[in-house]
Length: 266
Image (cartoon, rainbow, N blue to C red; front, side, top):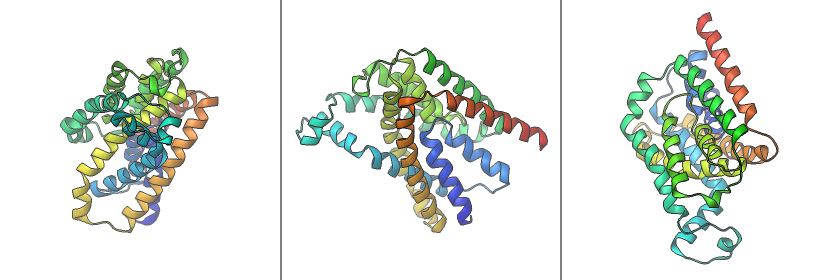
């Protein structure tokens, strides 16, 4: 793999993981479009480490507050940002469905459903659900008001992200909006909920990265995914305060049409 390819795939992972446009879909389509060989499992793991750095780097203060609140520790930072003591267990409960789905079915789904037509359908269908949830939701809840029911339902939605083209952030934001969270809080909870999953996936598969070794492409991929992911989080949180999620629905529709066109051309 050359450096340019590593940069492009790192950008796709960083932007696609946190914007509701599907990183997995793009990581399948772009190599297919350019005729690249499969980047390999070790490079995929490297990209996950990049996005893990991004989400932890952006939300590290939030995680300090969440952990301190759970244990009842009192620091100035915890007083500035309020989270209930049950927020951490609720996040853990919301992580379970996605973790189980990934552990049991990831390899099978990645092979059976890893084709352009599945991505086309997922892009349009789940993009449409995001559009409807954004238009119809009441948008009154903030992140720290999450209930156990909310966390589990959003976690079940996260489990669907194993289907290429779905988008982990997109489907969890959709569920959060449908449950009444405002646009920024929906995105924020989505990112917090993704952290344990991304961390677990990176650690679980790290042995593959260690066995194959970390070369220059992996290092470049990690750095690009981390930087682009951090910027994607910051941009989305500011963007949705003033604008809706509709633009991402139209992006997904246009991308799906382009993919269909490419299928027929080939």
